[in-house]
Image (tube, rainbow, N blue to C red; front, side):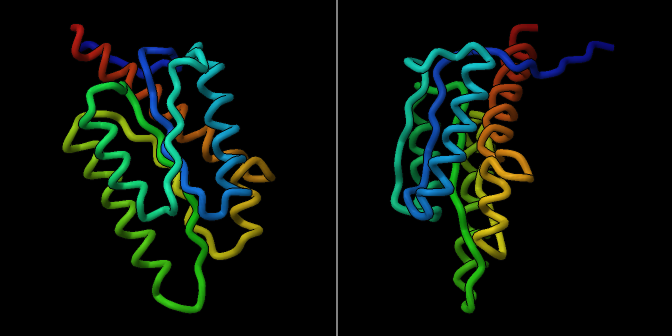
Length: 155
């Protein structure tokens, strides 16, 4: 039996797609993503940051980036906060599905850094507060998955 495990390594160019909506939160997620890249040895020059208007646009841009062939991994960062209408369910659900499709259709790992929170306080906690930084975690997951795919294809 051969076992593989993704390592936190630089295996090529990555894209970080970031929503401008709730930019106070998403910029903190981006900071966490950049920390993870640097810890993995990814030079800043091998990271492209692509800004989109809102969370819903993440799916399209992540898919386009994955189809470009330029990236070994992509990270999606955004925030959807529950309100008084069903808007939350539509945006969170459709964006999540689009990100999953982008990864499975293109075989490019996509780090899921979409916060789906009930309150702004929860978003703050998950973007570098008491619950850690989900941007960093999503980037680590994408980099480890890219390394795992790389290892498995080399064998």
